[in-house]
Amino acid sequence: MFTVPLDDHARLRPLEPWQAPEFLEHIDRARPLVDPWIPWASLTTDLASAASTLQRYADLASSDSGRIFGIWLDGVLVGGVMFTRFDASSGVCEIGCWLEEAGQGRGLVTRACRALIDWAFTERGMSRVEWWVAAGNTRSIASARRLGMSRDGVLRQRYPHRGVRHDSEVWSVLAQEWPPEEARSLAPGPLRMSEPEPAPEAEPMSESAPESKSEPTHEPEPEPASASGDQAEIDRLMDRFMASFTNTGGRRPDLEVIRELFVPEGQIVSNTGDVPVVMDLDAFVQPRQKMLTDGTLTEFSEWEVSRRTEIFGSVAHRFSEYRKSGVRDGARFEGRGHKTTQFLRTPAGWRMSSMAWEDEPARHPE
Image (cartoon, rainbow, N blue to C red; front, side):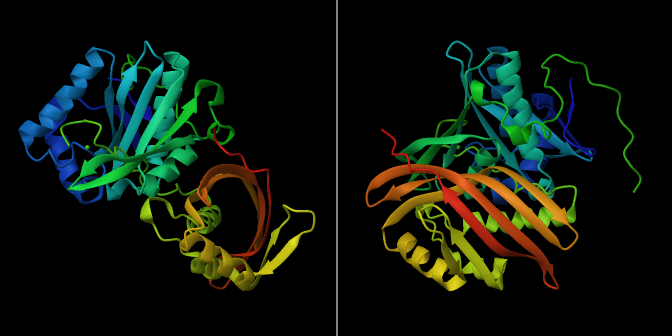
């Protein structure tokens, strides 16, 4: 059996029917987190149903139409990734993922998904990898963005869950877009479906009916922490800033959180028009909170697609490229642009001190 290292303590390898007891124990631990999102989680309740879930994926693997892999952290199964659909003839596949709490915050799902996507494109010659997600599953949407995917659209009231119909978002990445620049240095080793497992390494001392399209099939972890604690804290600040605008899937935006992210004297500058518009926090937050809650701007989200952070002692700078999409006055739009953000280390931790952005012209999908 092959094994792909995800970091010094985590491994990715196939999940097979003989591992049903371990799989069931893991799903019992993960159930509170994954049951709303994983179709087979609510059905995997005993040894027989756990074995059935894994056997179904074994059957899919034998027909080259799906696969499932587990993520082990220090020898304990904590999550997994899967090809829920794999159609070599059309060149299109779909990936999904899940994770229990013990595996969160390490970037394991992101690295594992990159391994699957890389294999699909480089080894199998696939053209398109898809990611289907419930519109309200913001953590899964964040993972799609980290993988460099683009949102293709929303399928309204696509599937029922516990008596309520939910929207699905469809995200994808194409072969010619892979790998995104940021993924180049973060990807794990190549995935090989027939490699033997290497000798163990010494650890340091210090959805409805099974896999029906009643999705959602993703329960990723939060943004992975970087090697530097400072970098991780700055990443979290930017994640919270971007998430504060989101009002997709009925989520209420919370721009008041921006006051916690900035120093009180912080400034935000729009340099999109002919003349820069310099705003204090009140001038920035109040009109945008209104626009995102009064129906003017709906189904809106904004996310980083690339970033570069430089830290110099107690000051830092981040340059970001971002994308955004939403519906304004009834018309769907997509956009992109660039941000430059400055950070200061304060007694309360890192805070933003200033930000400037420039939008490229908005694009309206046909």
